[in-house]
Structures are given as structure tokens and as C-alpha cells.
Length: 406
Image (cartoon, rainbow, N blue to C red; front, top):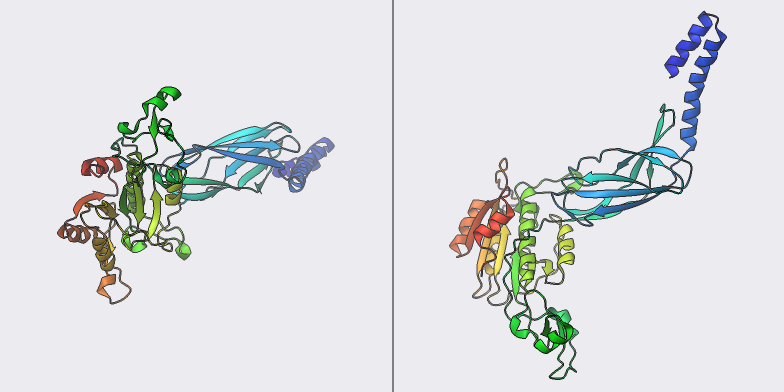
């Protein structure tokens, strides 16, 4: 418009045409007025974010709905959302016309989510002038936390529990005042043995009710997952150690999350630990949400958590590992309790990554062993070993290996 205005002014001067000179000056002044208005104007918006589903799943997508209510004049804006996750494509821009006192919405679909706890925002707003000759980019403060958890497969393989109680919390809440014909009861839940059904109470409530007077501790199973960078050959790091990521580790995290939740359906408690015995997370039938949130927070090479309780006799162990230092392997082998079954899923990274010895010292116990060596060592110690690739379907590995079988 400025170039056109200058051409019109010059043409008016050459042709001695006052109207042309005036028209050219109007074009130039219009651009100046637009730019000045953009400088003094700021977006005055109330922004609300809503995600569907409320928690994201790694590798899947989430729909974000933005609700914008302007407090000023009518205006047209172009919106762009700030996405913090690694490798996430930028959200496509959305043009929205805002009317004072009326909420407008914009919808974005974010794909290929990365596990973690993300702050989505702030919102980038482009103010577009009515004439379309200028725009101003600014940001609206405010972010929203989006939790992206590992993918959990619903395999439907959970077995009905055997005389299981309802956990420590239910034990603490148990009343001791119930009479013989009026024991403390609760509604029937999946996994409750039918022999504990209280038929009189069920008839009164018109629903299955079970007794709570006999309480038992929940059986435990132990899951082992390395959380050090050295244990995953495809691990990468960003500047300053940030952005630590491994596709093989994310695959392994999906496996242990699936196993823990499935065992929870069967009434068991799962303890997720590192090979050194540090507790990563705990899952029981009532804490699935908190357990998955804890897994969303797991970062490779983060400081270790508190020590996990020692393994009980006959407590099953399932380890999902790849490369291991010799001393970590030794600790893992010793962690197996007396009479306990032990299964190891040994994960090989996707094609393009090969194991390389990474030892900062001369201590041979710090030299990592590759997946093949780890599998051989575990077999020699009478572990059942299942070899898998990070590109295999989690459901196929869990079903094919019988990891949820008795």
C-alpha cells in the first residue's frame, strides 16, 4: 500500500492531478494510522483452556478447546498455542472474530504427545487490522498443565483375586461394632471372591454386598525398570542435559504400566523399582490415577527415590531391561526372593542403534552389558527371558510372553 501510494502521488505530480496526489497520500497515511493503532492496542482477553481427554496418552492426540472472552472492542485475531513437548508439531493457526461480552472458541488437535507434565501456553495472539494491512503479534499470559501418561493397554487378562482384602485404607476404616447379622459391608467390586458375598445385606440393598470383617493384605508383585541413561542405548539428551529421551525406555514404561494396572484389576499391589532397589512408584487397585501421574514424572537420570521394601518370599518379579552395568545386573539377580518366579523382558532398541561400551572409569563393573549379554546372564541364573524390540506391539509381547499368567 505504501508503494502504491508513492506511485499514485508521483503520478499525480507528473500529471498535475490533485485528486491523484490526495489519493496517494491517503493510502500512505492509512498505513501509518494502522501501525499506530496496533502499537497502542493490546489484546484484553480472558482465556480458558479445556483438554479432551483431561489426561493425555503418550503417542496419542488430545483436543484443546480455547474459550476467549474479550473485554474490549470487537476484533479479529489469529491464535497460536505454545507447545512445550519435544518433537510436537506447532498447532495450526486459527482465526477468530471476537465480540465483547461473548465467548468465542477455537479448537486445536495436538498429536504425537510426549509423556511428561507439560505447561501448555502462553497463547500467541496476532491482532489483525480491519483493512488487512498490518498485524501485531503479542502473548496473553497464562498456561495450563497437561499431564501425559504412558499408554496402558486394556488386555482383559486380569485374574480374579484369591481371598484378597481391600487394602490398608479399608482396614483402617473398618468398624468393629457390627453384629453378626449386620456386619460391615460394602458393594461388590471386581475381584471379590463370591464366598464373601453377604446375601442378606445384598437383598436389603438390592445389590451385591460383601463382608469386610475378614481382612487380608494384598499380594505384591515387583516390577523392575532401569531409569539411568546408560541403560538405554538409544537415549539422547538436549543442551545442558535437558530433553533426555529414549524410545526404548518409553516402550518399557508402557509395558510396566500395563502390567501394574492389569494386576491391580486382579487385586494385587505392584511395586515399581530400579535394579538398585529404589522405589519409583506404587500401584494398588485404588491408586491408578496417582500411579500413572507418577510415571508421567519419571525422567531418565533423575535422583533416586526412597528404598523399596525388601522382596517378600514368593513375590513374583518382572524386570523390563535393556543394557545394564555389571553391578546393576548383580543387584537385580540378588533381588529375587526365595521361591519367587522371575521373568525378564530384554528390550533391544529400534534399528539404527547399536550397543557401545560406555565406561567412565576403569572399573569393569561400570562397563554396561548389551541386551544380548544381559539376556544370557539372566538365563544362566534361571530367569525366564523374553526378548523384544522397542518397535513391537506391547499387547503382543505381554500376551505372547504370558506375563500375566499364573
